[in-house]
Length: 250
Length: 326
Ligand SMILES: Cc1cc2nc3c(=O)[nH]c(=O)nc-3n(C[C@H](O)[C@H](O)[C@H](O)COP(=O)(O)OP(=O)(O)OC[C@H]3O[C@@H](n4cnc5c(N)ncnc54)[C@H](O)[C@@H]3O)c2cc1C
Image 1 (tube, each protein chain N blue to C red):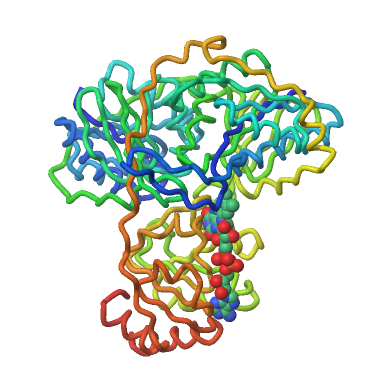
Image 2: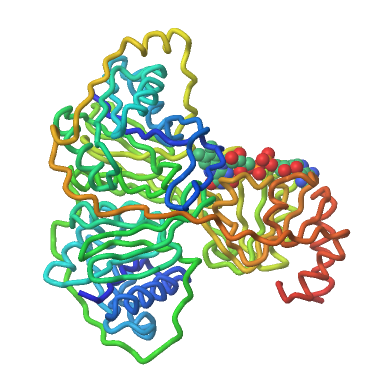
C-alpha cells in the first residue's frame, strides 16, 4: 500500500504575524516555520496505517520553494519514507497547486492521499478537495477517525460535520483530510531525525509535471483588524446582570 | 455574465439563518456585478424551501431534488451544481461556508476550472474580469484582500457577516431534473450521529453561553452553565479543550477548527481566549467574559468582564437574571 501525504510549510501555530510596511505583504523575518498542524496529523495518520499494516510506503509531498525542504525533513523525521518537492517558483494559487499534486498522484499511484483540512496561514482549505475533484476520487473531509478495511480496499471515515459525526465509506483510491481529533502527532525521535537526513527528496519543477495554467487568485494586500476599545471590568455579578438587562442584551 | 447564483443545501426543515444571509451575500454580489441573483436549492427540502426562498429578492429560484440528492455528499453536490451550470452563465457562484460547502465547493472549482475565494467577509468589487473580496487569514488575526481574475468565480461567505434580505415580491420557481449517475461509485454514506438538543442551534442563536476547561466538566461546572443557557434561551458552545476532554460533542466547538459564530451576545465562561478560539467568536456583537484570571486573553476582546470564580458567579448570575425576568 502506498500513502501520499500533502503538506505545507506554515508559520508556527502561535506566531503573531505582522503586516510589513506598505500593507501588501507580511513581515515574516523573525518567524519560525513548521509543518502545518493539520498536515502533521495527516502524516501521523499515514504512519499509523503503515504500522497497522506492517508494510506500506509513506511519501510526503509539498509544493514550495527550497525553504520548505525543512518541513519535508520534519515529516521524514517522524517516519515518512521519502519526499517529493515541487518547485513552483513565484506564487501559485490553489488550483495550480492541486494540479501539480494531481500530477504527482498520477505518477505515484497512491492508494490513499491524506491532507490537512486547512492550512493555518491562508485558511482557504481548498487544495485537498480540488485535488480529489481533479483526480475524480471520492473524498472525506475533516476526519476524526480513519479505518482501513480488512481487505485493504476501502476506508471507513468519521467526519466532523456541522450537524455531528458523519460516517462515510470510500473505496480506494480516495482522499481524506485530517481534523484535530484524528490523532496526536508523535515527536520526531533523535534517530528519526538522523535518518531523515539520508532519506531521498526528489525535487521537480512544476513544468516537468504539468501545465499549471495561469495564476488567477492573488492576495494583494493585508489589513489589521479594527482595534476594539477596551471593555469594562465589572465589580459584581449584580452589576453584570444589570448591564445585560439594561442594554437589552438579553 | 453579470448574474450571481447562490447554491443552498436544502436538507429537511426550514431555510436556516445562514441560508438567508447567503442570499443577502448573493444580492451584494449581483449588485456589485450589475446583474441579478438566482438561487439553486439542492436536496430533499428544495421544494418546501422554494416558496420562502422566492420571497427574498432573487430573480428566479431553481430546485433540484430526487433520490441521489436525498443525502448530501460532496461528489453529488459538486456534480449537481456543475450539471446545473452547463449552458448557464453566471459571474459568481456562491454559498454560505459550512461543512458541506467547505468540501464540495473546491471540488466544483476543480471541475469547472474556476478560481475560488473561501469564507469571505466582504465583497469589495465585481468587475467583468476581476472580483475582489476581503477574508480573514492567520487564525482571524489579519484581513487579506483577495483578487480573482476569471470570468466566472466561486466564492463562499461567512454567513454571520451578511444580513438576511428584506422580503420582496415572489420570484418564479422552476424544478430542474437531476441527471442520473451523480453519485460516486466509490463512496457510500453510512450514517450520521447528530446530537439532539432542545436548545437553539449554535449558528442560529442570538445568545451563546460558551464553556471552557475552567468549568471542570459535566459533573461540575457545565450544568451551572447549562442552567444559565436555559434561562437565556441560549445555545451552548465549547472550546476545543472541552470537546477533546469528551465533555461535550464536537459540533459544539467554536473556533478555527469548529464553528464560526457571531451572536448578539457571547458569554465566555472559564475559557482563556486562545487565538484559535477567538477566531470563531470575535465578531460577536457583545462579548461577556467570566474568568478568575484577570490576565486571561479573553478580557482583551470582552465588552464586559467579570473577574470571578465561575462556580460562584454563574449560579448567582442565573439567579439574578431569573429574578429580573420575573
Ligand atoms: C491548530 C489548532 C487549532 C485549534 N482550534 C481550536 C478551536 O477551534 N477552538 C478552540 O476553542 N480551541 C482550539 N485550539 C486549542 C486552543 O489553542 C486552546 O488550547 C483552547 O482553546 C483552550 O481551551 P480553554 O480556553 O477551554 O482552556 P484553557 O486555555 O485551559 O483555559 C481555561 C480558563 O479557565 C479559567 N478558569 C479555571 N478555573 C476557573 C474558575 N473556577 N472560575 C473561572 N475561571 C476559571 C482559567 O483562568 C483559564 O483562563 C486549537 C489549537 C490548535 C493548535
